[in-house]
Image (cartoon, rainbow, N blue to C red; front, side):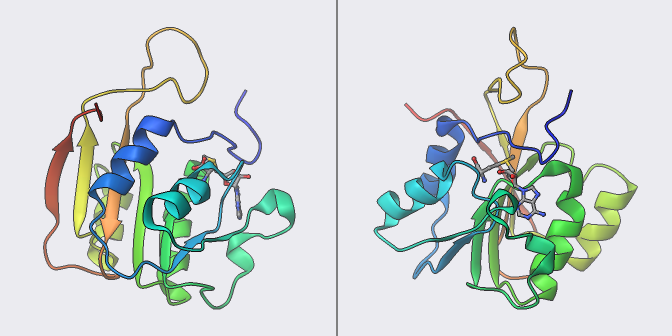
Amino acid sequence: MRHPTDFYPTPHSIIASLLHNLNWENINAWEPCAGDGRFANAIQQCYNVNVLSHDINNGYDFFEWEVARRPDIITNPPFKCIRQFIDHAFHIGVRRMALICPERLWACQKGYEQKQRHNPSRFINLTWREDYLNKGGSPDRALAISIWDRPHSVHTSYEVWDRPG
Ligand SMILES: C[S@@+](CC[C@H](N)C(=O)[O-])C[C@H]1O[C@@H](n2cnc3c(N)ncnc32)[C@H](O)[C@@H]1O
């Protein structure tokens, strides 16, 4: 059964890879779906910056924010509402965003339409899979990463990252 609030902590290998390759300057980060805090802690350690963290389990529903608390979101949001999450983030003024996402986020009609509104700067497939759903055995789903250097880019650069050594 799926967790009611999609509490599936991000595998450390994927966090490390994202932070290593992000290339943003002057990060002012918000982790609005922080879960156990592992992503926020890693951002803090990697860039030596303070990170603002919230989660619905601490009483902060992302969809209730009317103004972005910080300009840069870095998170793994609940996939069951990831499209609303993307639209809402830019609606409330987020300027840059890096999201863990399903590998087929853009490969469907709704994805196509959302890409017209908020085309990401980068889309990344990963060469490895992690059992982030804790199902046991070989993971059948791959995670990917979408990065917006601004709310809408003219072009999306496609990348494939290998597992960090
Ligand atoms: C896939 S988990 C990822 C947790 C963490 N970001 C990480 O990378 O390990 C998604 C998180 O989103 C939180 N969440 C779900 N719906 C939310 C909402 N409407 N507003 C804020 N947080 C929410 C869940 O409680 C859960 O901690």
